[in-house]
Length: 443
Length: 110
Image (cartoon, rainbow over all chains, first blue to last red; front, side, top):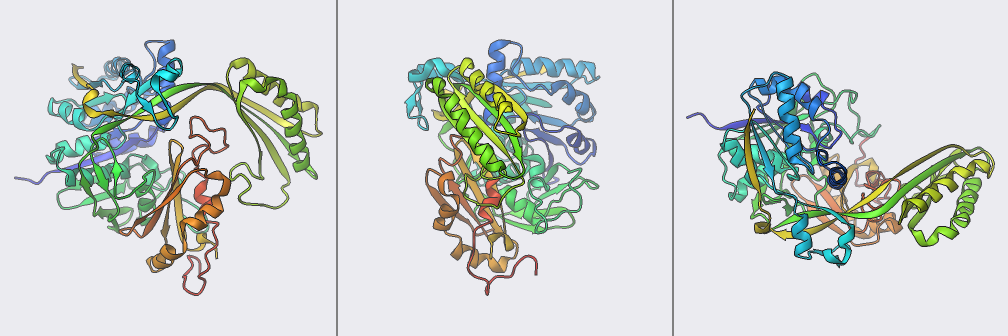
């Protein structure tokens, strides 16, 4: 018998990631699977708000482009797994089926995972929101969404039923890769050691070009030849070794430095990385060069997965407004500071409707709150940001920002952004309370 | 010398929590990093940016440290009014920390 292996590529790391470079990897013939993470913490809540406005919306808006770009990959038998469903897996499935028809893809089984939307449950059970110090019912009129992070189980189940394209809502980022790896390698989902290993590979792929030189270059210390056209990462997994690499001819790099920074990206205790699939231990992971833009990794292990699933709850927080104006030349800092004082005075009548407001000077202290003192800048940009109870108060903040045209002297380049403020806060739900339903549709 | 002379970092966010990992370019500098880059030095550099606790973890396999900072983003990406609500830029601030070990350290750029 031939030993089992899988080649899997990363296709997307967030809701608006670029699909053109991911298509290059899919079309290269190097990978059998592509994983697509399309959701950040806030994306899900914003998608739920879109769905409240329009029941046919709230899913990944790239699906038409996705189907056009990846029709060839699917026709060659490639498999795709993504959380394209966001707040509306059913609508995403409709778009996928439409896209397949339009692009001449036939005979493909589409697997759909429903049930990560646990809003009713969160409200019925009056779940605790520890970071906010309240329970669900106390702020029920503000709770707009609640989605449980779901694991690899339904993905493996759908692959077993012959699904070639799998989509769901809040599938946890690593699980998009853990599912295919477990299925192809024949690893049991309660083999915690193997789940730790699969989670390591997943974690190195899930952030796309973050692993191949994105968010890395810092001259003159960290320099790469070409970061114009980065390659998406891929993994070759076998019982003998784990290899991470990227498509030949693309820019960026897969090397020890890029791997290490991705290894520890967005993890807390490296000995206990909690996902729906395992408690992975990365503390003794090692990375070694295995050729040009090619590394070998190992040393991961795992312990049983958590009994609870993390739920991300979307909470309506009114309106957020940001308005900015620039000042240059001698005295620019003083004029910007004066402008901030004037706006603060002018906003006093609206104080009761403003939850929080801050005044920052780009070029001086906006990023680090004055923790890193600099010299005299040639120009500064005043940024006024406020979170308000209602649209009228947010409009008042925007108006006062724009009125800085009228002085102090020399203010220019006013911009204003305004949007509903949807906060997200975590909660925990016993695993058995999340009822997932899988569906297979023949396209 | 600055930490930047011999180490690199990346920051990431989950809710209102930031993690900041730091690795050495040259494995020979790992023990110096372990000894010198204390929670106290990180707290001092970040000051008012971090309102909660700071915990330090080690990654002996890759010779790295991971600092986890709570209440570090003014409410987290969805709520924060800060310019950089993800704390992406924090990786540059930690590299500004002064490390007093000039005689032991091999800097990245000779």
